[in-house]
Image 1 (cartoon, rainbow, N blue to C red):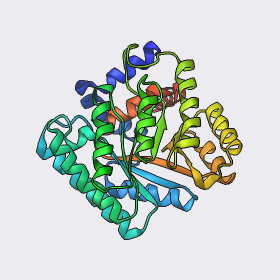
Image 2: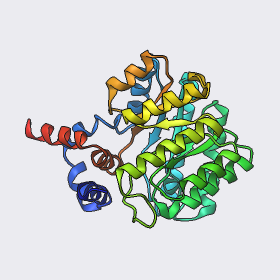
Image 3: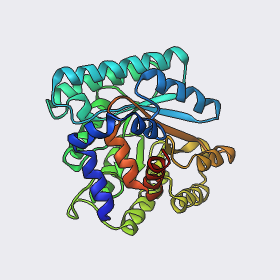
Length: 306
């Protein structure tokens, strides 16, 4: 992992920097390249626009590492409101939630209780619920939550898996056997070498192998990448296996490589856009800067031109 990426990820965890960055109107405006806005209305407005372009959406109410039960319940309430609005408008939009936002670090039982409520609401409106994968300290707990929710009858619940984690292959086999639909991404947290691959080459190889396995054995794979080489690998593998556009989907982040998103839709592939919204946008924004130098250059040019 590059020094710059590590620094940006760690900056995303700094509450001091968060206060400095989020207090400035200019920075909030720049962040809107990657974040729909701070309110549910903002998120739904972007969702409607993307749906009109032939895309589907996963909404993400931003927030993580909650340490107070009341705050966790408030986040769950916001997720339930989002699902009510999605259902009322019949939008093709699922929801993504972070277990630590639902109180995982407060109480595992509280988290399971709140996620069960959200999963039930998601099922009622016929949409998929994805548990975001966070740092490696909560990976096992997240996988176990998916198993627990599915075992309780919430069939349309899955999670993200990160190809840079050394344990991910075993998690993919375990969750695929349980029938969970998985979102395959590379990973966006700073992890030690003992836990995660450090070089881009290793991460890409692990991603390609995982994507191939999911196309062969997975339940509706959700291929989340902006990497041209990996996208072409998935297309070739799907054709070789006789898989069509209805058998899986590509996923990309709001505001990242929009022309590529449009090209995939034009070519007949399914594309889902991950649309974050909420006041807690700073950690998410910093991880987007860390992932691609082009994103950081965009941010610096915007600052220069003001």
